[in-house]
Every structure is written in C-alpha cells, then in structure tokens.
Length: 499
Length: 62
Image (cartoon, rainbow over all chains, first blue to last red; front, side):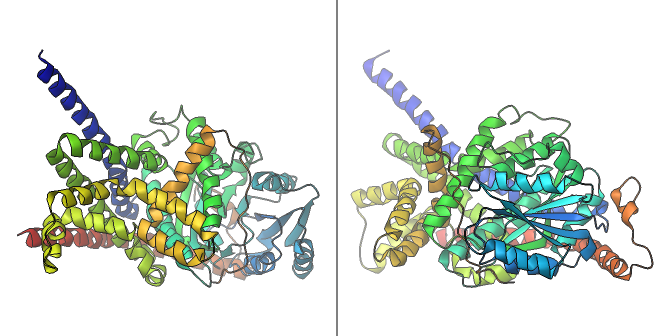
C-alpha cells in the first residue's frame, strides 16, 4: 500500500467511526419517539378491565422533618379525601424535627382522633428511607393495614385520587400503584413551569407508555400505594443503601412478579424547586440513585424474563436512552465535528438527518404532551415552546431550512456569508448541545451572584431545560466516579402548593 | 370479582356512604377507561402537526 493509500484508509476508518458516533445521537431520539408512539395503545392496554371499587384499610405513612409549614394542610387534605374515614389512618413520622412539626401533628391528632397518629424519631437526619422504615414497622405491627400509601409531607391529594389508586389493588397481581404528581405551586416561576411541562411528559405521557410496555421505571416518591402483601414481600422495609429507594422499591416489586400500575387520573399536587440550585440538589440525588440502580440491576437489563418485563429490549432502551443521554449528546457532537473536517458533505447529511428527526420528535412529543394536561400546558405555554432551548430551536431551524439561514436571512440585510463564516456557523451548530450543558452548569453558578436571579432564567431559556437536566445527569456520573459522599439533601418546602 | 380482594369488601346496604362511593368509583372506572380512547385522536393530531411541519419545509425549499 502506498503512503497516500494508507492515509486514505485511515481517513475512511476515522470517518466511519465519526459516523457511528453521530448515530449514537439518534438512539435517544428514536427511544423517545418509540415511547410516545406507544401511548395511544394505552386505550387498549391498560389495567381498567381488572380494576374494581375497592376500599382497603389504608395506612398513610408521611415522613416529616421540619414540615411545620405544610404538614397541617396536608393532613386536612387527607381527611377530606373521598374515602371511607374509618378505613384511613395517617401516620406522620416526625424525624426529630426542630420546628413546630410535633405540635402541628399533635393538634391534628386531637382534631382527628383515631385517624392521625404521631410517631416521633428522637434521632433523625438519616434520610427518607430510614424515616419511612420507622413508620412501616409501626403499621405492620398489627393486622389493621391492608394497603400502605407512602407520600411526602407537602403533597396535596385531590379528593378522588386515593380511591382511583386503590381500585387497581382489587387485582391481587398488582403490588403497587402510582399517581400523577403534578407541579402545583401557587406562585409559579419560570423553573416550576418548566418542571410542570417536564412532569406532563414524564408522567401522564411516559408512564402511560410504561404501562403499555408492562414495566414501570419508578413509583413516584410522593404517591405510591402498596398492597400489604407487597410491603411484606419487600421485607417490610424500604432500601436504605442508595439514594434511589423509590426506584429500588419499584424494581423489587416487579422482579417479585407483582405488577406496578401508573394511574393517570389520580392527581397529586406537589411543590417543586423554584431555583436552579435546589433543582440541582434534588435531581443530582435522583440521578446518582439511577446510576446505582443501573449497576445494581446489571443482570436484569436486556434479559427478557417470564416473571417481569424489566428485561425487555424496549424497556432497556427507554431506561438507558435517558440515563446515558448526556454521553450520547457529547459523542454525537464529537462525531459531527470530526466528520466536518474529514467528510463535510457526510457531516451535513447526517446533521440534517439527526436534527430533523430530533425536531420532528420534539414537535410530536410536545404536541401530544400538551393535550394530556391542557390546563397546566396553557399556563406554561412559554416553557412548552422553549422546552429544548431557544438556541436549539435555531439549530433545528437551520437543519430544516439551511438556505434560509445561510443565504436568504443574511440577504435581508444585504449580507452574504462567505465560506469561513458558514464554517464557523456550522461548527457552532454542531457543538451547541454539549456547550448548552456548560451554559446550564454556569446558570447554577451565576444564580448565586448579584443579579443572578435575572440572568439565570435567560440562560435556562437559551440553553433549554433539557440541557439543564443533562448537565445534572453528567454531574452525577462525575460524583459517582469520584465516589463522592451521597448526602440526603432534602428539598426545602414552603407550603406554596394550592389545589 | 372472582379471586380478588374486591368481593371481600363490598359494602352492605346499611353502609350508605360506602355504597355511594362504590357506585361513584364504579362509574369512574368506566369513564376513565373510555377516556383513554381519546389518546388515539390526540396522537393523530400530534402526528398531523409534524406532517404539517414537513410539508412547510418542502414548500419553503421549493
């Protein structure tokens, strides 16, 4: 082989590697499209055929640490549930609170005798799972409890939500039921509106799809109903070894051959973080938990089983396309930039194919999602339109209408882009998504500075809420690789939820 | 409901509140089940939006 031929071979091999890297970016897009295309099948593949009116004696376990601002209203709401009062007990597990939480619970216990119980841990601060286990051991101590509802202290259950959940437990094959956690802050800001949109996409949309696929990824921490049999089968306790106790509970339930059902019509309102800093802490905990779940259940992925559907290829794709999304984005961008130098025509073709498919998926996902919760979508219309980020929308526009961006729009000002300007624009477009994660990371830092509360929303709108979540997921990889201490950072709640 | 928990807990005639809840829940199951069929036209509408976007692209690119 001549020297020129050898270099041609290396160039071709490098171009193929770059193409494979670009294709890695297609996988999450395809998984999202597949997941959302499964939703309409929920019309037939749902659990309503086996649901019946069923009112078991429900023990509601509420972990509470310094929840004085919210716990009273939460208990009042629980007592107003459209559910037989004699079949309802609320066990508030006070995790050594230092505010007025004990007094509030005791006054509610006096107001609702026999329905509200105050359990006090004198040594607290070990995390939600430990607090829950204290409560679970109490409710399992006698035979009264037939079903157990685990919830957060700040969430508000709409009156029909509990009976909409218990009806699925009429089927003895069902171990647990989850509800739709809806962002319910009274005074929404840009971030809680983004979270509202995210929750529409991840719950009434994606969890319906998971009902269709036959496997649920995670029971909502603020709304999970278990049959007594399931609680006992789980060992009568919640896992305390990781930050993802809800996901582990969900997996263990399904690995034990019991179904987990998502009920989209049972709505629970929750207060979500209003600052990037608070969101980062909350999601970092979730993301690190998911990393540990991924490794813990490494023998489950892509290994179909007769007992559960966690090992199906479709569920594995859905799980990994989310947990590895930041890596897919970075690898895909590196591939595009490599191709730009090696085979610019191929780079352009792949870029258009990737971003046009991403744009079509984004439009489909959002156009479908907004119809699943129209009132909330109307209130969050700006965040619906800018969900992927304003700059990412420009990139999609570039993929859809290249001549408009490169020729016609500059021509409106009498300008013409020369080759170097087009190259710079192309490079910027190809590199945008990894760069957007950096912008999202910077938004967290800037939020702490003077004027940060003004600049941070602008950065999040520009970079996109999805980029913010990807940056947090990427941070979770780094923390896990460094074996950083896994702390229980409780999200501060202020009682902003309103029904 | 053969073999399910539901049968064990069917309320008696004396428990009027339970009976009313029973009826409401029974109707709700049916209405929620039917409402899930609306997911199909909603999906078609969302796909139509995507199709419109592609058509616009073709028209713009000539």
